[in-house]
Image (tube, one colour):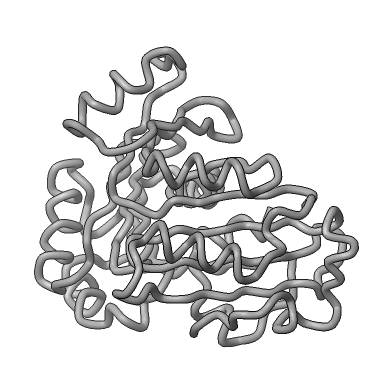
Length: 279
């Protein structure tokens, strides 16, 4: 779905940008795309999602600049403005080992010569921090052109969602979310977070092998422990069919966002967006 070139004409009639301070604006940056959504924390009927793929004529940054300048309303005062980065490059640091002055050093321990600014985001409980990076010029541009933006990583709402899903569950659980040609795999033993990884999801055999190898390394039981699936499961039938032959307990996450979504939106909106809308 492409974005129209002119102002706010495409927005639903019930979104009045004259009252933008009543709405939350969230931008989502994927490796090859851009999307945003606007919603009202007070009125569940107000929700709009729009996405665009990037053409080859402009650089990634120039394309984002063009979209933001063409639509013109991103710099308005919103109740909250969030920028979410989707990538497989992030590091989780327990709070006991976190030092804001050493985020670069901590991130570079896992990723050599990262290109961009290293940012950090703490979990809602404060028990761990997500370190991730964003292109320096992109970061500076968004800081200049958005109203007081908060920068996040896509894995954070997934971690918080699955942490909640795991509450009161004594068995081990492996959560797999399919999104944006990635699979994010997050594992718990009781309420203890064991691991979080995001891998490219391009080949069904590679994806299946990666998930199965995590089960083996963490000594998960194919009979007793849970595999919980979310996201674009419709696109990963080959992967899921194989996993169902290996693992007995396969479940699907049921999300209940607090805004009114169409059936198509429920099926296609990334899990991290729906997780934010559930809070």
